[in-house]
Amino acid sequence: MVTVDQLTPPGVDARLAARAHRSLEPLHSHHYFSPEHEEHLAATGLRPGRMAYFAGRAAPMGAVGPGVVVATFYNFSPSLVARHVPRCWTLASPDAVVAARWASATASLTRLLADTPTEQVVELGDLLAEACTALTPEARPLYAGHADVPWPADPVGRLWHAATLLREHRGDGHLMALQQHGLGGLEALVSHTATGRGFTVEAAQRTRGWSDEEWSAAQARLTERGLLDEHGLTEDGVALRGAVEEATDMLSVQPFEHLGADRTGRVVELAKGMARTLVAGGAYPAGVLAGGSR
Image 1 (cartoon, rainbow, N blue to C red):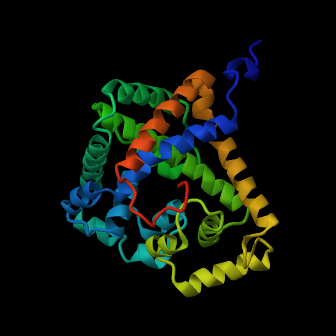
Image 2 (tube, rainbow, N blue to C red):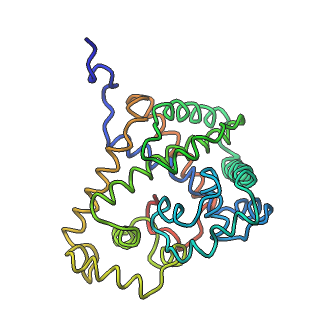
């Protein structure tokens, strides 16, 4: 009889998978800060800024309402979402938005990776496409919507789509971990900025739509739980965030278990090089990220 252990490639653990996911993040997330994003999505009739972001990321799920966006995006103010959804669908159809998003992501990645050898783009795209064959849609609504979109034929678009599928699949799992550990959307955002990684507090509040009063109230709730004090995260807070990350890693290991250790290592090598190129090319504006990003 063949056992589960015999079916699992040796040498792949959650830590290696987490390194692969982190190395891939800029290949996806740079797009939201690119001029191409605003240009292409505004051309559909959407308003630049938050509306373009909400509609672009939600469009693969169809003309969903604000509740679905709040639930799947998780850390945005419901009032901010409601200002743009469902009005966005009266200005542009989901199909038009999906097409514009493809065009903008491919254009921005092509520009930023102009000096990256094509064979590396193809190789990484092939590895990630293979990793994606291990993904499943159960309890992963945002991933499932994007997984229903046909794969693009061009190498750059294929690379971005694969990175996006892996990112959204991991993100859906991250929300499960946050719920398991009692962190709602705003509490998750406040505690994450307190780690010194990801968004600065100013950028988090501005882009996610939370007022000073709402932010302070969330800080007070975390302080009451013993997770936060005037210096930042307490020991319990650090432990809780660590537990969330560990659970997220365990829920996102499958695609890289499928690749095995050697090919996952190659993913990290290629993606880190491309990520450095993106950052050096000005993919992220100054003052947005304090450290890594999710």
